[in-house]
Image (cartoon, rainbow, N blue to C red; front, side, top):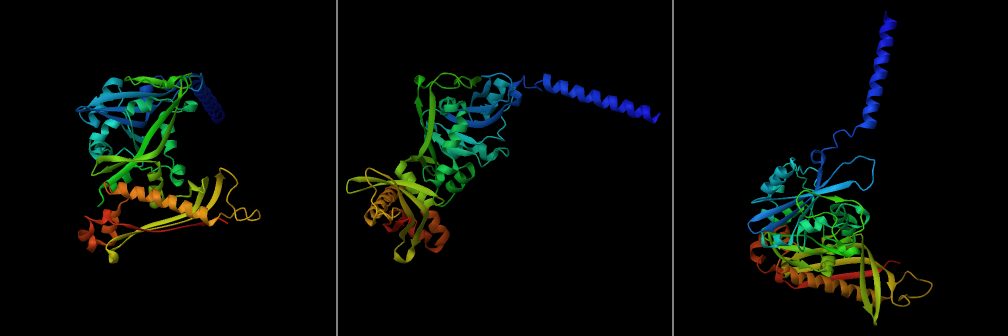
Length: 390
């Protein structure tokens, strides 16, 4: 009797396994309805009069078989608030765009006229939005930027995140920021915030976009249209939530040097009519306020340099010591760094993106009221030393 029950159990087990294997190889497990399985990876926000236009770009799981299948979908909704615009997407598609996996928020050029913290209010109130999501601004419409097709057939949001990567930040080329840091900077005593300014360069095929900007459209991977390269070498700056201006590439470079965390920076300097491209390692910087000297700004920078390229034979002490750089070249590099920092400080007078007032408040609080109105006009004192990496 026990032997019969055991045999019956074995047969049932085998039949269940066969049934599961049959389902595994013949069923897409509900992937027919892509709207219910879409994962929002990025959101673009534009302002149109008194309405918000919000575009959600979602990754769409697809069956493994078949080539040229849809890799992502892009849907746009409108409303008096960002929350209402997202609800409009729900009305159009039948699914509400959950932002648990949203890693990128892009503000279109039209957001320059708004308080960015009013624009982003929904993302701070929603418990499911990760505050680690990167934030950037672009020229034109965020919807159109997300619709462009990068090389390699990736989602545009993935390519844009690469353009804001930590590696580029460590090379002083990009001033990346997330929702959390943006709020911290905006709420500080300096009341200033920043984010990468995204630009796109199109090549080949006229640069047509990978996804239509119409609501509910779907981008196809592959295709023969032109592709887009995204860069974030400049920086949008805000004061009290309002757009002030854009740091150029040199100012962004200086900003990153002073913020710290730069591993290898590359700078070009000229000596005796020859251009030298120099790599700066072991970067160390500090910006301090000396209240004993009338709230003077003291900027200190140290780095070790090596020539990476030059227009002719590199300026070396001797052929035997090819790692050494002439002092005159090092001095030229130091002047270039100082010029870029000076340019940044001039911009900083209109928006304290360097957080000088916050530093005054944090480290010299008893002098804050006396110096806060004049500190941004203080003349800087530079202490810049760049030595040969050898």
